[in-house]
Amino acid sequence: MINTSFSTQPFITFLRQTLRATPPQEWSHLIQSCSQLSQACHNNTLDPARLKSVQMHLLGNPATALKVALIMGLTRRIQRHTSLETIFDEEATTINLENPPNFHSCLVPNETEPLGIVPHLVLDRPGIFVATGTERAFFALLLLLAKEPTKCQGLVVRDFNPEVKAYVDFLVLLLRISDNREDFARLSRLFEDDEYKHNLDEESALITWQLWTVERRIENSPYIPPDMKEYFRNGRRFWTFGQLYYHTTAKHDWSKRQGCFEGVNYLKNNELFNRLQKFARAGKIIATVGKIDDLAFLEQKRNIALMDIWNIPDYTIPNFQLKSRPRIISTTVVPLIYRSSVYAPIEPSQAEELTWILELFKRKISAPDPKRKAYRFGGRFSRLLAKDRGISHQDLLNQNPALSYYSIELFEELRRYLSRTSGQATDAKHQD
Image 1 (cartoon, rainbow, N blue to C red):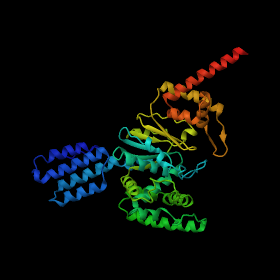
Image 2 (cartoon, helix red, strand yellow):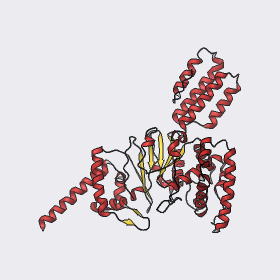
Image 3 (cartoon, rainbow, N blue to C red):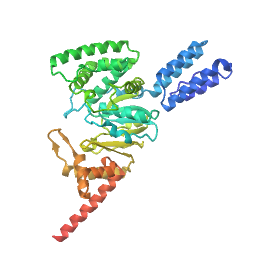
């Protein structure tokens, strides 16, 4: 009886045992091909086109029921093993757009030099890349795949704004159904010229037409799994996501900005588009709704190798409680500066004390920002530490990027700060 466990390796072992008595000239190529596929699965370099090619080659030879069953079984196991859409089905299909966000929703990339992140795209071990935002997550993924083509096992977009997930889900859908880059450019944009036409009636009509076109393509596309079709059929999810995506790209089309996004503009470069489409069709791109430091669901099944948290530390100080040791990239928007450090967790007792100390600071220095309706505690806090040291805010974070989130470095820096300020307060009291 065939081993039906999740792992691919027991299946390969069974295959070799079953075929031990079979003439080598008939089955050796089958064993070799399956071993190669198993290794590719383990290294995350499996190409769906390669898998299909091997299947057709094997089934083109004198076939037996056993051979067909073995190859189909291996195919299913490899697909389950590599698709994030399957592994994290619940998280990837949970979204609620009924209550719009009570903050300014920025769905377009606001950095003009995405190549600046390249030195920080380092994977010490194979694993998942976690990023926040919409297009900027795809830019970083393209650059990461160029550097580490075998170590990146998938992209998980994590953002507490549900509109980000809606945008990303629809973008992945378009990547899956497009025949090529030119086809994707036609399906993903409403206007061909460089200027946005401020005619809302025309835009609405074009969106409706595009959505009808995409909807027909979904039903006939071999690259849309049944579960994904069902996901978009749920309520008006397909039309809601599509309207959000098309309205955003029509009003702010990043791909047409001159002098920006060089090296990541997949709408104008076949190699970049093919790289991204291959990843999307393999089910290795998902978007989830939630806080960037709430990743327990992900670590239960995958190693987190790299994180890009953008400028979230300007607003809050993430409390990552990770078993993994990813490199964490953070950014200052003005001026645009990328920085990174390898995550080192702190002890639970230290985390408790750090939370208490930060709460005291929050009560003291935080104030509502009327424009964004949010607390920019993180930025105020790090500037306070920089002022105490007598250096600039940028220099402080450049010297120690780990001060942007819960870390040993932040814990020790706060203790030094409290020690200095307590001493100053005591001296001033004695002088009085």
